[in-house]
Length: 79
Image: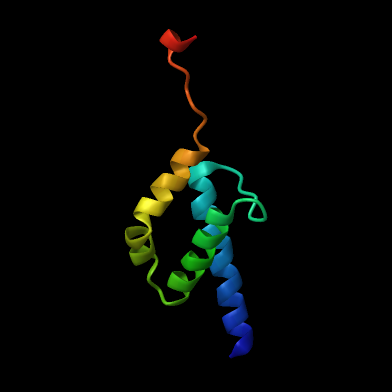
């Protein structure tokens, strides 16, 4: 039914948000377009019960996104 599809989609959004925030902390989906795209694609994969494939197919993009979120650590020699 349409109601169960809406519930499933909402649940997939919550699950995707949880899994992405476990990687980088708080996410502002209005500002972070990569996170928004990842969440949208996660929801599509989850809707089709393919979340393992999502993480395989998007592993490079996820890693790059995670690295962008890590504050740069200055080398002592540069200070």
